[in-house]
Structure formats: C-alpha cells, structure tokens
Length: 119
Image (tube, rainbow, N blue to C red; front, top):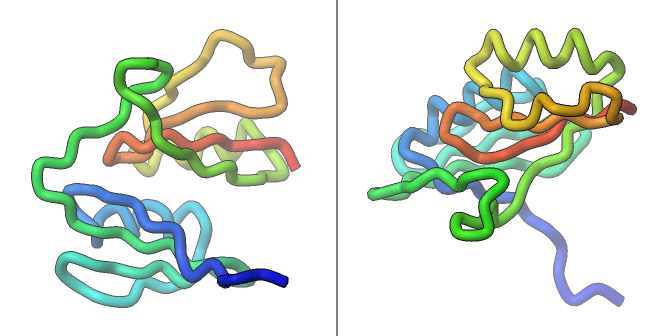
C-alpha cells in the first residue's frame, strides 16, 4: 500500500510562466497560476509545476560537479520531428554525438535537461 500519491513534479526556474509555456507547447495542457508558482495541467498525466527560484543556477549536463538533479523523459513518435519542434521552441541540444540511439538529450530554456525518447 502506498503512503502517498505524487502530486506534481516541480522545476525551479527564473521565470515560471515562461518555462510553463515552453512545456505547454511540448506536452499540451493548460497553464494555471501567476507569479512565483505556475502549474501545467498535462492531459492524461501528472501536473508539472514551476517555482520561481531567486539566484537560480541551471544544471550542467553531463557534469559531476554540477549535477543535473533530475530530468524528464518525454516519449515521442518521431524523434526528428520532435527535435525540430523543441529546438524551434528554444530547447538546446546537449548531446549530439550518437544519433543512432533511441533518445536525444536537450536543455529547456531554463537549462533543465530532458530527453526525447522514441515511443
């Protein structure tokens, strides 16, 4: 028996509304809230929340000295099409060495790593 239920995954960032907008364009859903805390209600899934973090320092990937802390794996049907779309939205590629893998690594506009994974 579980002791708790996952409410949301929360990302620290400098601009909660802007980062929620990035993920809303990637995942769909609706943005709720203003100011220091913004929620993204993702269709059929858990909520993502975005919290203002004064002095936010983006993680570095890969870097043992600056841990990524966590990352999101986002499942897609077409890696090439999804890559083109997230790059147009402001994502930055973090690992372009091996294009034969079933995943690709990016940073969102605030610097959090995420992967597009073949579904």
